[in-house]
Length: 442
Image 1 (tube, helix red, strand yellow):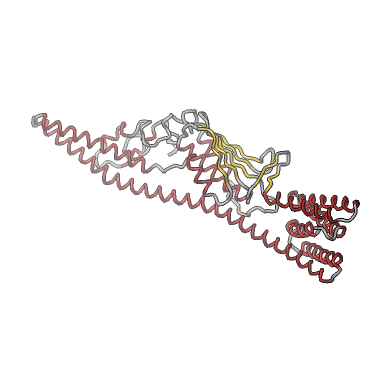
Image 2 (cartoon, rainbow, N blue to C red):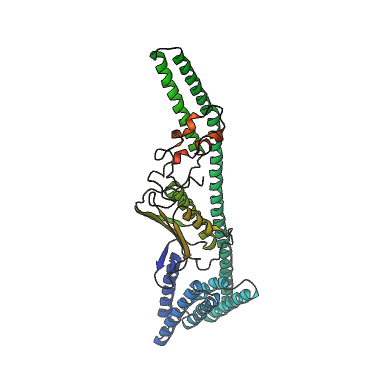
């Protein structure tokens, strides 16, 4: 579905079908004007055709519904008048178009049924009058059929919108479950590595140190003690590397700004991603907060602006990353999906972004319909919890001191996991270093 935006205080999103309908109505009005006999009738038919087009625009695009009903009534009434003034024209088209829109602007019930029935009977009588044949009454059945199909199409569209909103919810839940399963599996592997590899290497290191002490006491030559020293050093290094690997495995993999492309591409509705500028590096926690905020914003748009295209704009520079997610409001003739969230989505987004040292604002778009969520996050090294030292984004420990520099190397093979130095259990927090974002929270 292609859309265009019309600037102004009451900005509308124009769809391709709107342009097609306007062109069709213009052609029908032109044909009716040419078919009308006499100059006076031509002028009258032209004015009535313009009024019918105006009525359809009001009926399709304006809220509240009472103005929409008046617009549809104007289109149908002027269509009847054009049909009677120019029998050889195409005045029937506005009547049928109005019959298709009318059920969408009236609540289901007897009133809507009576109005559609009145239009169908009036249309049949009008065709009978201009054709001079009672068979023209059958045209009323066509008007009723169009109105009925319009109702069915609206119901189908509502179910589709609800399905899109539910799919967005399911996709977010599925991704969360996959990440939880991956974290659980990584934790299992980390425990196995710690219990088998790290303890075995620690035991080997202790045994080599004992052999080295005995060799030194017995006065062994350097040709013997030298290789023992190197083997002991290698064993100690292996212990520290194994513990660093365990810590890395136990750290959950975090998504970031680079993953937004896949997130937008997998969104079940219509979403577009635009990236401009070249951002500095974000700390892992900050990038993950941005990803989750965009994911929640897309889900909210699917709930409350169902069917609207969603724009995700990412702008980066050396100081910060700015992301704006906006929809264009509920399209004309559509209703919200009915899928409700937990009511804490915006608050959760704001808390994530603020914990990363950024800020988040949300509210209606000032110059048009729709809702916009804007967030700003500083790049690493620009202050705040989200921007630590320039090397804080990596998780390999190269940019900050890890547990290998602490007192963990002195642990014996049978020492409990909780006895590893002040860096935390098993040294899992060691690779992040003091400049890493969110290490205290973990």
